[in-house]
Length: 84
Image 1 (cartoon, rainbow, N blue to C red):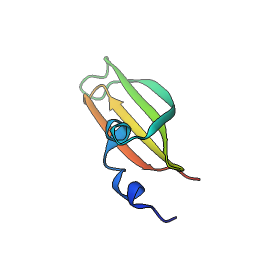
Image 2 (cartoon, helix red, strand yellow):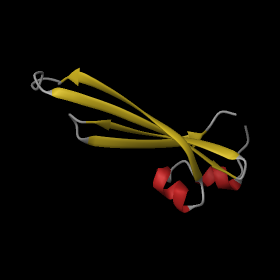
Image 3 (spheres, rainbow, N blue to C red):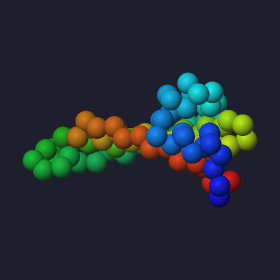
Image 4 (cartoon, helix red, strand yellow):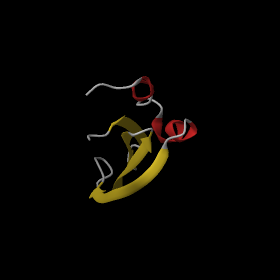
């Protein structure tokens, strides 16, 4: 699949950057999972949360995922062109 110049520049922007460039949010879904903590914190609950965003602009589609791990207190965001 070939990318237009718009698509080639957008994966590293993230949801906020894409919205600032005129992409429209067409939907999102969040999945959460509670797990036991990792050693030495096995007794503490660990939340893993993944939110998937679907965006469109000029006939193109992009999917972004934001993943959060409460034990590491880190958030990771990744965007890629959506499958047709």
